[in-house]
Length: 263
Image (tube, rainbow, N blue to C red; front, side, top):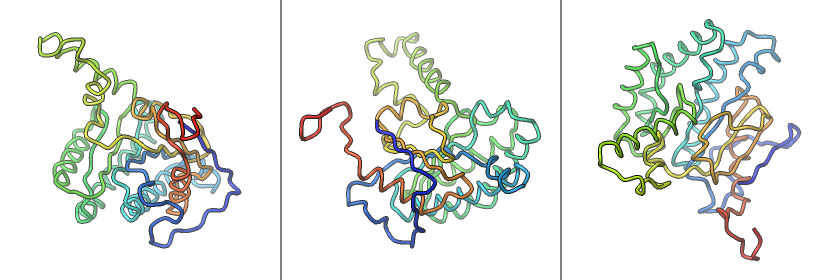
């Protein structure tokens, strides 16, 4: 796992609707995950309420989905709301839930028309039945699509996900359908929320912070990490391309040696 952190002064060009330059065929990531960080700081820096930062962040999500489709990414996972985010002020949580509902209402048909398949990771909303129903409807409507898979991590925490997977396997053992010796890394991975998605290749985090924040800890074991200084509402195709270029320049050895025998 190699980490790159770009500086704010690094040049980032706008994408022009063409495949990203500097990424040879076969060197692009299949599965990209993004920790969308910096909405509140963006709002503060612009003298705006935090809600406006979250609203602009939704616009960045739309740009990013369009770029992922255009660039041929197979799966895109976005960290929309963590299981720890419930500790935020109640008013802010309500605003975020309202934005999620609005996004589904406004964008679901467009995503479906663009052949996007939506997957929901995490445990859903613990109280809001309307959101739960909307999330189920989204998965059901787009489940047969064959283009980009958009995985939305909602009420998601990676440690909780791993614990849930372990409990599911423990129940199989208790029922006599599985022996402890059959619990392999592959078997555990198959019990995670991301089962069926391509292996995670690249994790991008915006805002300059350098941590995973309980996001896809198992899946990121051999992912490449790229940290960008841009605040999430300003993220665009140009920044996305820069991360893909950095990924394409990596030599991924998965614990082995390179051609020169170096670890």
